[in-house]
Length: 359
Image (cartoon, rainbow, N blue to C red; front, side, top):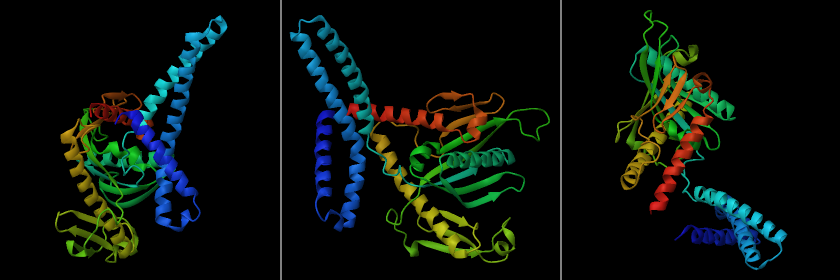
């Protein structure tokens, strides 16, 4: 099916949905009504853009008709101008339609769980992990999203061995899904008296929040251990068995949570993380199978892939997947990620369009 046949088909589906929603009693079946409204919202931008394309297509045909029959110089000049405008609009709208037709990632609107772990580099890596945590927190704040700390293991001197937190906001996964992988920092540590540049790493994993229906957890498949919380957190946290550790027996995945004073709240948070990790495993398997069939998009999504370098002496950030270097390290570390994310999104869309054209 070519693009215009597909667009015509989607237009008819949209009209059918609008008609069904207009029927008396359409809202009686709440589930069906919700599904139709969601599908209508997904199709509306496609149908609207296609309508504009067809209007310009009609204008092109009218202009060509005038040019083939008209003798008046003024009319010919006007027709030529309208023809040029219509064709320019059609080219632009056609590109928009191609992007709109790219299959949407079903996880794009989900909240996310971000996991950052210090890698090679000792205390400097832990400090860098903390810097990444602040960077994503600032970005979320600028978007008007909420963040919720799930668990952390600090070094006591400003670093973090690991940290897990949730980001709640519409489209959170669609913005940050390209952040998974190994981030590398090059800078002179404060403790380095010789002025030598050290290289350290931290690993970032972006996991869509899994709903209970996404991953069914059988209580027989995981073990719950409770213990006394450690580290900072106040007397109540540290003197009661409020910390929770879940071990998923089939996969060996271990999740710990001690941020809350309540054991029940810690258990709920730990279950959220476990469910999202299991969901990520399923998604990665599907991604690997798909990648074997077609060209990879932006990176592999594998948390072991080296994706970005933050070079402090040169004040630059380089994303190795799209070979983009930005000399604005300070603003990026303060959460100004829009240019990076927009470039990664555009590159991903271009790769997907190329795949669609080859099919």
